Length: 315
Image 1 (spheres, rainbow, N blue to C red):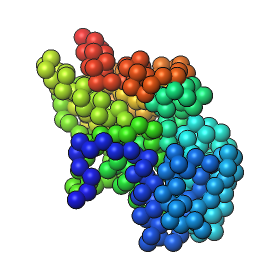
Image 2: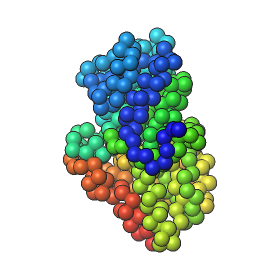
Image 3: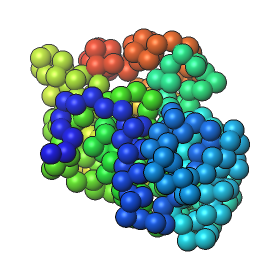
């Protein structure tokens, strides 16, 4: 039996365990970390395969370049650190060393969004999807639970070219059953069909959108919920089809509303099917220090606040 709906599991631990599992049959897989392996959970791989695990130290640019060098030697290189360092500090290396040469490097970044918590603004990466979206050859995946995380890591291992996987610090409630889940790369997942409004989200806000839908149903509002697990390449057609049906789109993300999935959806619809879009997320501010759940409430990303705001938008 695989992971089931309702289990609350650490997506970081799932990543580490999946990587270690892949390492048993794939001798080409190597892992690079920037002195955070007990947080990113690449330590699971390192304990099993010490000769294929490399700690670059607190030198994230070197970590990316080391992964690139290993890829050039025929290895499938997974490299991990916190999202703030992976995409912010090492942007130049990702762009010019990894993506420009279309190297087989998989950047699995953890601790994305405001839910890093008490570490505050300096560690809360709210711009990483935007940074990665602008780089040619880059694939962007954002899992909503451990089932999806495991599937995405396995996909990334087989995919030829750069991949960015965005993981949260928080443990997430499974919305999928592993035994019957199939990850469809580049195909947005319609979790719930509805007719009054389209909610497009991914990552740790998927469960919040699903719970907000339940609250809205009690008020006579039937929301469609789409899990945009693949941000790039974007499934434009599913977005257009839903927008044509509901004629009102709301995006929800634990990320800046500038250049995140809200922007991606706006670009797709403005060119193909002009529709009113409201972007819910972090509104051009830095995050702040606080307990994870308190921050989700403060930035109005929990089901209760989302339901309130969606109802106001529709009125």
